[in-house]
Image (cartoon, rainbow, N blue to C red; front, side):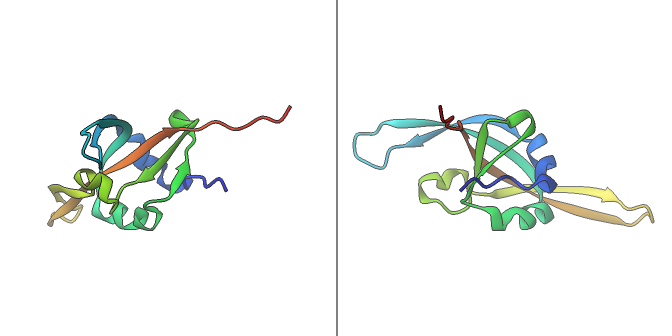
Length: 119
């Protein structure tokens, strides 16, 4: 089953940057696996909106067409890249009242996908 990333959350991916994760091996041999990923800093509100999409692989469109992403939230192999505090930004509302916006830093595993073509 191909799940497509919801278009309403594409702006989150537009701001993401590509990174490489060095994932230590689970076994005693100590090999490191390199995985492509996206790192994004998003508002707490946006994170709460995409949280139900976590740990599920989604195909994406646009600049990432031909790729699939998986939001890392609680996978023990990727604990180092679980969502973390992204800080606060102080802002002033239109009425002149100060407020804070809380941010979260998240990582999406990034994989190449290809469609099989029947001859």
